[in-house]
Length: 290
Image (tube, rainbow, N blue to C red):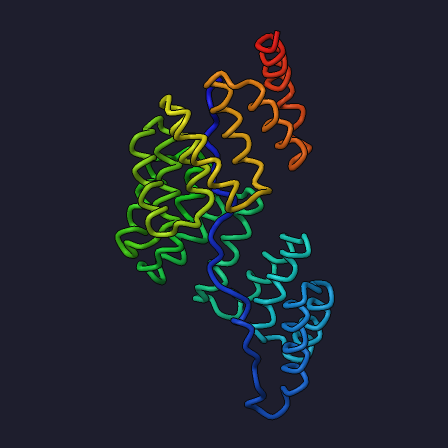
């Protein structure tokens, strides 16, 4: 059974919500809008996204050009499951401030998370026009290109991100993934090695390295990497899948079956796609037990 190389779970988030620092009234007449804004930030910190949105709404009603309120309302809408509303808020910021790198960056991130990869690339292109030295944006654009099947273009972007920031572990890991998708498993493993040296707790790098090692026949190495990924994140379904794949290829069908069943417990929607593998592992395990 050939393993599946798994992608990193998310695009790198570019900015954080105001770093949880509050604004203070510097001009007469906007005090109440700032108070609503600050209360919205606090509610966001407490994961009360609907409450945060209500307060940001109030801040914007009082001050319709309050960029920070639009920005953070966009994040709250995204977290509340309203990506279209979030994109609308970042588009509004760009009406107010057409050169806002934050707005293009956030909008690109949300488009990526909404599977609008072409739209994400367009926004990332605009960020790079405004700031050509932004490694995170090269990384994120590379992820979008990879999703569209442009692995060579993705690798070029990861190369640039690494050139700007040689300690960028996620960029190495993402370049490794793109190389694995091209069948360049040895090169991919080298990139995962670099990512792990920089950040020994980068769980996705271990998981993806496990898949690459399984693809070149190093099942024991794959199992060791999957073990490490599971140690770092015991609820990481992809790591159990990659370990199951390696065990299956090694002839440990009972072990593979146990891991496949764990995948389903952690991620029930995958049951249908895994059923054939589970049936095969169970049949072979029963035969070995005879």
